Every structure is written in structure tokens, then in C-alpha cells.
Length: 292
Image 1 (cartoon, rainbow, N blue to C red):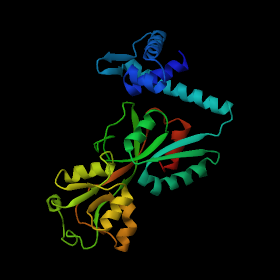
Image 2: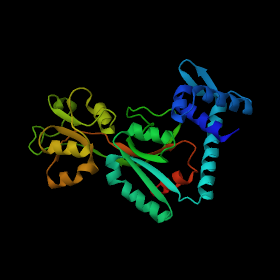
Image 3: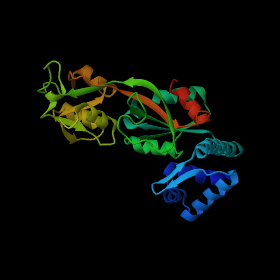
Image 4: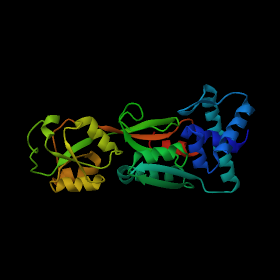
């Protein structure tokens, strides 16, 4: 059993096909297939169920995945320590969360580990962040979801097993410019928004998905951009926007935006990492710094 075989095995689990794993690893598909066969011979059991739709780990493959991650992480830790490299924690966060929540996480990390170097990747697309966590490019990511199963909001979850912990509820607010036709009407229902425009970002956005669950197809969508753009357009009367309350709290307090009285289910701020890596130093420090 060799480390390169374990890396190849992990890539096939993540990407479900030899061809895709080969592309990620920069290897020929025949080399990937041979490494998997050699690994299976070395442990004496089949690690994958093979079908026209791809390769799925057998129960033995699931157990091997836990050990593969553990051994690869230990090997990487040994390399860093021998090379006397400064330890690194790699955090991903949705752009809005990177502005509001990540600074506190960084401060707590610095308190706990002054020797730690932290790399932060902010992105407007949750799927790219989850993909980076699944591939091991990030130790963990902060995303928005419901308080149910991972992906219950309506997004695709990576094939690699993921774990998560919910950190805090995130209230959403449907906002508009003062004097908007819906301002001051009293309690609104979904049907009251028919004929009005909802400012949105992109379909992969958690707030877009929350709007789909809340309003369905009853409201016209107008593609605006990120949170700041949606809030800015709403201030100018170009439509209503469903946004995290923390992102527009100042504008609501100042009166440049008003909250429309529609019952809006909230979301949850969620820390996500690859299953089985809770003992890894980077994930462990992230859990601490996130206040868990």
C-alpha cells in the first residue's frame, strides 16, 4: 500500500469515475485503474462497486477511505514538520460571511495559535467552496443552509462524505425602499408579491434558493448581483430583495431600507468539513475558532 495509491483512491471516491479522477490527478486513466487494482489486491477486497454510472465505494471502500484520509494527513503533517513549515489553516466562506463573520474567527484563531498562518478564500458560489473542501484544498468552509440535512436548501452536496455543525441562526429580511407600494400594508402573504420584482444574485446563491422556497415562481426575478448590489438597487426602488438581516441592519436602522412584513424562514450559518477529519489540526482549530 503506497501513498500515491491512497491519493488515487481518494480521488476516484470523490469524482466517481476513473476518467475524472485521472484529469484531476494529471494521470492517464490506465494508470489510475492500475493503481486502484493494485490497492485492491494489497488489501484483498474490492473497494468499489463498478457500474455504467460510475464507481461507488463498497463497505470495505468506505472503511478504507477513513484510513486513507488519516494516513495522507499524517504524511502531510510529517512533511511539514520535517521541513519546519509554518502550519496553515485554509478557510472558505461565502463573500457576505467573509465580511461579517470571518474576522471574529481569525481573531480567535490568532489567540489560540499565534504560530498559525491562515488563508481565507471568499467566493460567491457555495458549490465551488464545497468542492474545494471535498478535494482537500480547504480545511473547512462557512456556508448558509437550512437547519436540516446538508443541502436541504436545494444545492448539490459533493460525493465525498461531509460533516457539519450549525453555528448560529441567520435571519433573513425582505427589504425595499421606503415608500415602496408594499411598505406599510400590514401583514403580507406570498400572493401580495405577484407583479413585483425580486432582486436576485445567481441560481447557486443560498439566498436565491431561499427565495425559491419562499416565493416559488410567483414573483418576477431581476438579476442584480451580490448582497451589496441587491441592497443598493432595492434602495433605489428597483425591486425588493431577500437578504441576511446582518447585511442590511445598518440600512434598516437608518431608514434607507424598510423591512416588508412577510414571514420569512431563516437560514443557518454552517461550518462544513470532510467527514473523518475532525482530529486534523486545521479542522480542530477551526471548530475552536468558530466558537464550537
